[in-house]
Structure formats: structure tokens, C-alpha cells
Image (cartoon, rainbow, N blue to C red; front, top):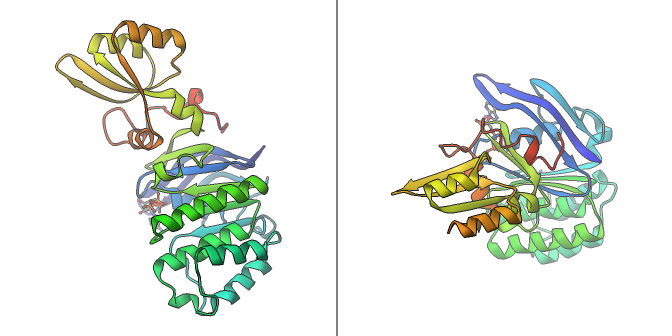
Length: 306
Ligand SMILES: Nc1ncnc2c1ncn2[C@@H]1O[C@H](COP(=O)(O)OP(=O)(O)OP(=O)(O)O)[C@@H](O)[C@H]1O
């Protein structure tokens, strides 16, 4: 079942198309990564999901309803964003407010997270450091146990140890209390193992969508003599290529079955896996064949139905 369904969503500001005819869905009880370069449109998309932003056209449905100014939907969501401003009150009051807003709030879990991130309960949040502010968002997002939790770049200023704590707590709690999580981030390699589904947007367009495992398995680089590489690659989607002196290295979306692999080996080609980070970089329009307009998000790559 899909918790979020978006059809032909467009958001234009004066002269800027932040989201350009996006259709996607987010499956219930998954951790979905929303990935893309700076200015790709991730925050705009999340703000529209959270009902904080209007759309220019298209349809957005969260739990089967339009989220705009919809209290019923918004009560089932927790939204954590970078640079959130908090009122000038002590941190323990912020936690209390969290418990009023979120019906599934777990005070014991919140206390454990406060301890993990070593946050001072009696200090006003406005006096927190940047990393501590981010930890506040993470505590609120996790302890709310909302049916849909949206984390938009939640860890500005958080050190590597604190980020790992976030990933560990999220995974452990998610295993015990399944819910739907959408996480927008630039730290793709760090969160790679956390993500079940991946959505990549670039210049406001969806360029890649699917299950992380499927995409990892399907994306490979093939290297060797140019003619032999071309033969094996055939009509598959090419995300990036380098040609030098009669040899080529091509990043391509599979599938590559056993027969393809045997054929490649016989032709002295090298087939290597591609990391999620490399895949996202190449799909995000860094030039050549990658990016919007490649049709990479076409039907054959879509494990997440639009
Ligand atoms: N209120 C606004 N008015 C005008 N343009 C805007 C507004 N909000 C966003 N944009 C533009 O829309 C585009 C997408 O911005 P958005 O913040 O959604 O990107 P992002 O993917 O979240 O980027 P980042 O990773 O850098 O946070 C950018 O070109 C941005 O300048």
C-alpha cells in the first residue's frame, strides 16, 4: 500500500520550476531515501507533503487525502527539517510539546535518545549548538513514532558518532515499530544500508526510482575494448561513459543475467558493481547521458509504482 501518492506534481516559483511533473509513490512501512543535488527540489517536495507549501498543479495524497491544511493527515506525520526554529523555552518543554502533538509519542524512548545525544533538559533550545539543535529534531522525529516521518537533511552539524547513533536508533526502533520514513540526505554512502527504496530527483524531475537493492544489483560498470563493451551494453540505459584509446568504461542499468556475465567474461570485459552514491551522482545530470531526460525513471526501473 502507498502512504504517499503524487501525480504530475509541479511547483513553480517566479521563473523557477522547482518540481516539474513529478509522479511517485512511497510504500507503507519502508525507509525511502529522497536523494538529489543541491537545489534539486527535495525540500520543496517535502514541504508540499507536509502541507507547508502549495503546489502549482498536480495531485498529492498522503494517507489517501490531500495534506494541505488537513489536520487529520498532519497529526499522523512528523516532519524534521534542517534549521528548524524553536520557541525560546527549555528543551524539556519542547519535548512536552512533542508529546501533545503526536499520539504515538514514547516518553521513555525520548528520554533514552536525550541521553544518547547528551542533551541538557533544562537549557533553552535557543542556546543549543548547531549539532545539538539537529539532535533535538532527531529526538522529536524518532520519539513521535508518527506513521509517516519525514527527515529533511536532519543532521546539519552532527558529528559522525552522533549520525551513527541516529542511524542505529532509527533502524532498531523501526524494526520494532514499523512505520514509513522518508529521509532526504546528501550522505548517500552513509545511509545506503538503511534505505529500502530510493527516489532521485534532479532539476525538479524524478530521474530514478526503485528498491535500493534492485538498483544496486542492476547498475554496473562494464569496461574493456569499445566494440565488445558496446555489444554487451546493447540497448540498456547508459548513465555514464568514458572512452580512451579504443577502450571504454560504461555505467549502465541492467538487468545483467548469467548469460550476459558469461558473455562478458569470454570477451575479457570487466563487470563491477556500482555504489548507490555513484549511481545517484551519475543519474543526477552531471553531464553526458545522465540526468533528466534519460528516461531512467521509466517503467523498467520502477519498483515503486507511480
Ligand atoms: N520560496 C522560493 N522562492 C523561489 N524559489 C525557490 C523557493 N523555494 C525553493 N526555490 C527554488 O526551487 C529549487 C529547489 O529548491 P529546494 O530547496 O527544494 O532544493 P533541495 O533539493 O532541497 O536543495 P538542497 O539539497 O540544497 O537543500 C531551487 O532552485 C530553489 O532556489
